[in-house]
Image (cartoon, rainbow, N blue to C red; front, side):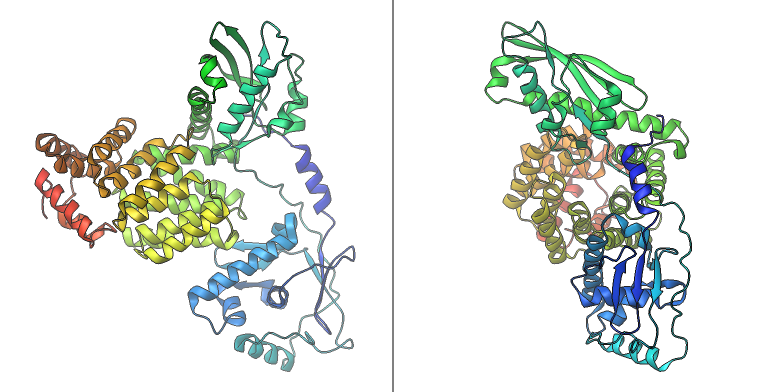
Length: 567
């Protein structure tokens, strides 16, 4: 895929190259941009945070140090949450310039060299005069600074900053143009426009891609299409074009799927819809088309990520590739997925998405039996989820992954539910948050609630290629709700697509035992042991989040009845 320099990126570089913050630390604390505009911060602690950084050696501090100064009366969990929220508000105030002012690397927060200058002098007034932060840690620091002799120098020249890197977009952007009707109809393209709009509506429900709004896409109407103009105006990475033809009660769609940077055609295919069903609101066939498109995006990204050097692959393609490889669960692909996520996280250090996906990677590594040190990987999952929320505490996806860490690894079900609820408040239509909260209810033995969330997640993800993963989790909900036929059916559907999913094997065994289909259960147990030779009933009880609950112990008995060794 050829690299494309986007017009927005060039404008961004020009706009960013001349700006810096001016910070007055003597007299009242005044923080403004170099053009004289005040930086409006709603909280005194956000202003204090900048003062703490600008007066520190190397203009850097650890998060734990900042937390100790500004929230010294709170426990570690509450202090970290308050720091995270204030950083998010600071990010909002700085907008696009946040990454050019504040650098975040693991536990370190720092001001970027060249992004600020200190102004004023001791003649103006006392150091940080009038600042009122009623925290013991901050008061001790302020007293020591005012009594010391090594106060920071002001009016130092501002080093010329390096050209900032343009923003990194982590989701591929797709545009669907209105379909040309052939032969031309008296409706002036209304049918082709309606089909394109419905396809956009279905695709927009995927959390893996960004889709250009219908009103923007329809400004480019066939047959006169200028690919260069479309790429510039819509800023799209991929494009769907085509034509539709009515034959009796059948609507025939001939669609082209292409990558805009290289103008390469990925596929050209024909699809058929029943016109009456479509006009009546039945979108099942459109959902299948959307699945084909998203699946192609994933497979194209995987091919690039596997065959090309990582530096030459776009960030959104690498992230899509990593997500796909994670769900393959073959160990070599799974390992490659982490390498790709690491690369994306390095390119986009201020994005929460790659860090949250890394947390999910460690969860899957543990539960698939691929971890050589589960305790270490549990800590890494927790660290990555925390880092994602440090970057953006209002990211619905990161909150859902944080809930998954707390539910599956920490077994802190109350904290997990709070994270899931926060995620769903931000995005009530998130299929992942619904599915992972369904898992929490499954662990807690709340069958009806788990099934309701599983079915909502399925309805919200008509084109999600992670369907086999969702099916395995839904199977768990059905078995807890004692709907054993459905549990077995969903587990089998998951395993047909991905036979490596260990939890789907376990749920299938439990469902078959409860249905009295003991020979099938015994065969399923042999297949599970072939894939996971270390599987034992005792190990399941010790490591599974539901192992201590009555329903978890009942599942363990069923595994034993099917032939899984006790120890």
